[in-house]
Length: 184
Image 1 (cartoon, one colour):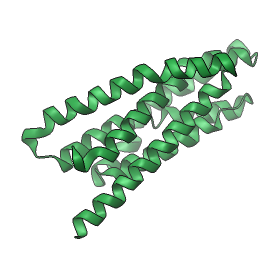
Image 2 (cartoon, helix red, strand yellow; image 1 turned 30 degrees about the vertical axis):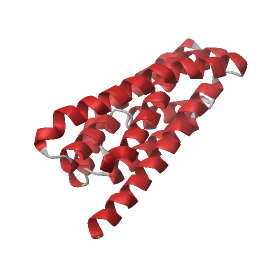
Image 3 (cartoon, rainbow, N blue to C red; image 1 turned 135 degrees about the vertical axis):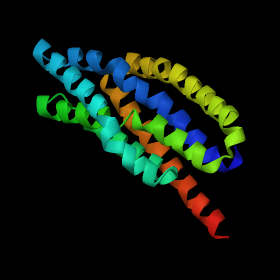
Image 4 (cartoon, rainbow, N blue to C red; image 1 turned 90 degrees about the vertical axis):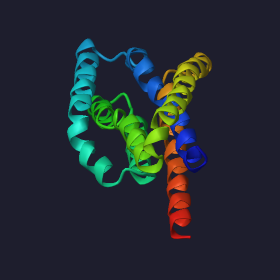
């Protein structure tokens, strides 16, 4: 796990952040009095983007199954969450970018593990990462809900953007450390 500690931390931050976008998106739109048509269209765009995501990301992840692919996905995801604004076209762009990236992160983590860890250790390493993910996914919406109770639902989408940006920085640091280690 030592060479993957930055990736594990990035995965924890991602798990705590990504789920908040999906959990609070409808509440965010409702708080801003979005018409039902906008809510339906936003979720439709999000769902369609999720369906297209494997086509978009499978080759880049295969070509670069390391922390660079993970950092790239997390950066784009963070940007998509940060785009969230009540303007109909902007929230649609946010849903499109977000939907097209968030499922790529687990795929990138799996590819990273398979390219870094000997095959005999894949199962326990994937189990450890799944546990890390579950912890983040459990805590994230709860903490974001507390934040929203004291601010607004907009803070929950900012939570996603901030945590995913922190995850991207952490993954990029892991990429630099991996490169330095492999060059030594």
